[in-house]
Image 1 (cartoon, rainbow, N blue to C red):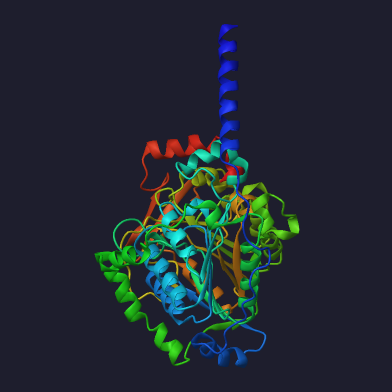
Image 2: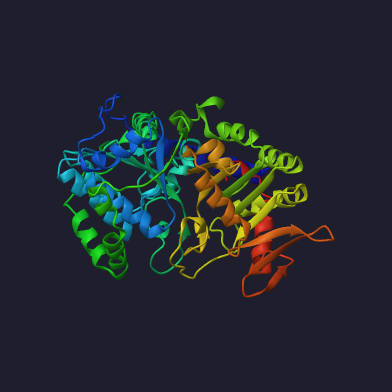
Length: 513
């Protein structure tokens, strides 16, 4: 009995502590007007004049230009930010305090300094170390920063989960940047060195795209909805007041570093600025649709017709011949697994590329995915798991968008019947489906969809997961210069790694992965 009395006292103390923290660190008032400033597209600026002729030649259609190479994706952002004369709207889950993060933040500062209206909406889970720099940007007359779903306890932030887990477990995973209201970049990349594939250490392979045409109006409207949403808070209500200016100096140091030199060269070599000036930008043209969660999902209030997962399920149900899925984090869940398995049994070619256990950076996600592998393979779904690639490959073309200079997969690209492609932030997992907000562009482009399909045809960069004659899974590695090699367990992993993965897979946490 004494044990239970002590336990009860401890529980009361813990509960009182949690309640005390919640009362001590409440959410602030949002601190902004509900109606955002209306910024019309700047068709008289360099970007507007560069894309207007092509838009006029393709009435009603949108143009999309995939960005598969990390250095290209970084340089494209720089070029478009420097060309903007009216507005830049940026919305990101992660903005890192590193070389590319500082360089791009400084470009926003430069834009605001020359009078461009800059709006930056960032998820508070992905901006460690940036409070002071974001406060500095927010203090500029032409710039405004808002924080999505903020942590009220700033240091240590993670302690906030103890007293506000239900709210903080919902994050804004969207990634977009819109320039002058006439061009947007949308896709899977966050802002940080690891997403732009340069320098030492681990890097992600990712895909995003430049988009122009009517789809940009939809991205702009989506940004405005999130900007004004019930989960967005004025930065000056969350962050400490700005101190001495530091963005320019930090960015200058980053640019002068060895890694920064590589990014500076990428900017010089990219040529997008010259193509903008010469009005020579080229795109894949077709009907485009923005898939985006309603921002009320961040409050747990979105209905089924307001979330991306239902739209993707409906789209997949219409597939007749092929479905190609590239998802860095893949947990289909019972409903998704049943859909994919039924499609495969009914003659649809279903292929899935995700990270292998050796390549993943989130082992619990792989643990949950492992439970679905055998059923998917038995039904005829073709499973491919990316090898941990650490060698730099150069001279990549669009048909090679899934090979390259990454040690892990972060892309989210789907192909439907070889005619449509989806590029976005959405992972095929429960977190993307029900907890995080997500977005992406569906483009009717046989060229992009076919490029994705061809890339999956001979995947030398991945293991093919199949069933052997004894009913067990095996992994086959194919290379151009050696016979295929077969593994009877997750390749290039230890018994301890596999054991830990299976152990974690038993935990009841799939709903939040």
